[in-house]
View (cartoon, rainbow, N blue to C red):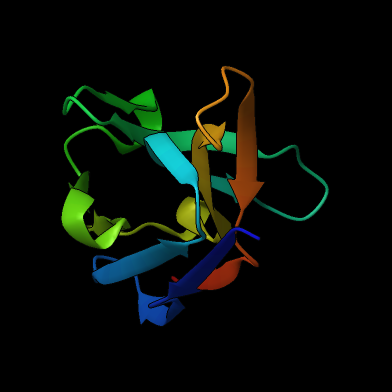
Length: 121
């Protein structure tokens, strides 16, 4: 059983900051990458940022220079520091973890429960 527990969402004004955290747990789950997605009402879930075991990072163009993803591999925890927030950043943010179970090659993706981020203008 793999679980991802998120925290850190909330309500901020334009220009404010929030830090999201996501801790992954589960026996025999070897994580290759973790990331953050977001989904606004009526829209699809989009990738915001992703970080691999080796430290490779990806950011959506809309958040480059404002958001920073980081990871504590020892704790299987990923963070998303969000600065200079804008109303268009408002969404439910979901943590993801990609990896394998029991040493097998098949890859799985697990999701957190989601945390609401609301940016008021």
